[in-house]
Amino acid sequence: KAGVTQTPRYLIKTRGQQVTLSCSPISGHRSVSWYQQTPGQGLQFLFEYFSETQRNKGNFPGRFSGRQFSNSRSEMNVSTLELGDSALYLCASSPDLGQILGAFFGQGTRLTVV
Amino acid sequence: DQQVKQNSPSLSVQEGRISILNCDYTNSMFDYFLWYKKYPAEGPTFLISISSIKDKNEDGRFTVFLNKSAKHLSLHIVPSQPGDSAVYFCAARNYGGSQGNLIFGKGTKLSVKP
Image 1 (cartoon, rainbow over the protein chains, first blue to last red):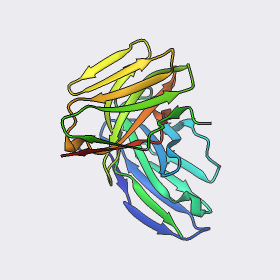
Image 2 (cartoon, chains in turn blue, purple; image 1 turned 90 degrees about the horizontal axis):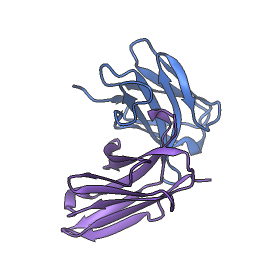
Image 3 (cartoon, rainbow over the protein chains, first blue to last red; image 1 turned 135 degrees about the horizontal axis):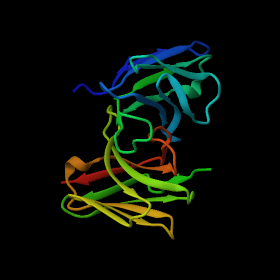
């Protein structure tokens, strides 16, 4: 069974640009969550999608958005990039909403904003 | 304010000895606690969990202890092995919440020396 796939693995963008990251969950998993990992803040929850609907949202500005497609694949978008958006963005998929032990993380996308 | 705190950024232990990683939390509504292990360039992997109605959960070399009155949990690894060297994250879930909105600590980097 293939794991959670995140693309691209590495990305360098300039301040003010926008970026789209992709996450393909494990086959059969319907819930996808996104996290931001920075050295100073650890892992912080961005949002969770289930059945193409955002179910939960963390405390991030509106520049951070996401969506989920009918095949459960998810994308997140960051507009008007700031230097502080440099981080590892992790996606986690789980079989269903609320399944506490069933989540698997992808390897992440390392975003560098210059 | 941080709801889940891992106050030790790093820990060094000799192979074969016990590793004890600590985590404190402030929200009494957390109903589940999890530990994740993360190697560089990989996503976090689930290690062990404990429900708030229990005080101990054991899985092989890994044991998690929960002290609700002190709002404190710890992960014990016995015996420690060099392959255990990684960053360990403590995470908590709000009662009735979903997998997606776990609240993570900032992590403790464990180094197990041969």
